[in-house]
Figure 1 (cartoon, one colour):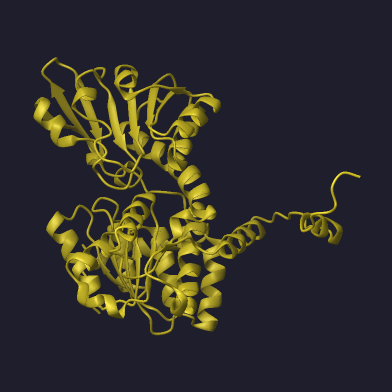
Figure 2: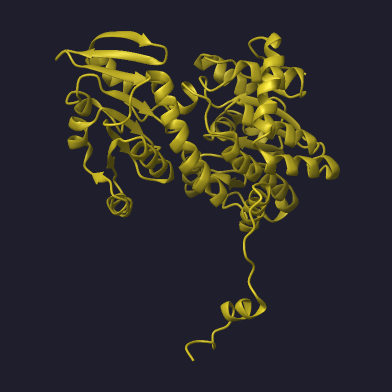
Length: 419
């Protein structure tokens, strides 16, 4: 088995952390038990480009239990947990190519390594596998049944490819499952983003003016958690419906040109480029903290900030201080990469339990239905969402009601109105 990890000697510590995460992932554990019995993925080669964390390790275990041959690389150089990567190789027979802090050449070299396995299924977090396949490794396309995409940013890229007629195989937008974006993006991103900021800075959020750039599912979660910690939250948006929703949720909504003058902490969660840029940096307060929780490190225009700076230095781990000509010091956290993974451990395992359950079940569903799928982006089947939610409630020991026969009949009829 080929692999490239930092140090196999870290495997024992990684295994302990993987098992700890598993204790909070009962849904995935149930799926893994079924997969071990039924082998629905038997002999299928899967290439995965995901954050190499304890939670991802448990997804790899589940896919392996189903009979798959999995090769894994990192979707972010700063999110890799080296002990987990080592344990995946040493304890769970997963070909893993990931080293924390790897440079750009190594990152794309590792993508090439997993694609060398000639996958039949791709699992992406940001669509980098799909991008490389379509641009550099087109010889692989005929052998690929389909793929999964985990992130909002990746789905945006894939829908653009489909609209342009260049997407060559079907993709399930696992990100768009309700059990993913409603829970993972809102509760997971909300908590883990603030966790990353706190670990990087040890700052007090209470009393801060926190500017949340974007009010999608992730932005909702971040804004809500920041408010819960006592922050005065400002939301910036380009979508009038989301801007209105933020107002109705009790947040101030301002254009960035104004919010930039007020914020103490800025968090971008838009999926777009240059959300914070030169004209914003030059009016920010001295000491401002700037973080990104969108997938790619493009939301903060760091090259422009570096050009404006008279001095750049490391203030503390995961904090770079840029001093401007006016004397103001701006602090970029985690190199502008995903702060929840660059400076912390990402989403809690109990949230990723549902997201990765969706990945595993969508992979199974795609393989069963591959003959009927076209080269486009599909929403994951709704029955998978319902199944995952039911398993999660059962694991939590929570029961819900069921419809009576009379209620079911009423909801399916058209002639039982007011009496």
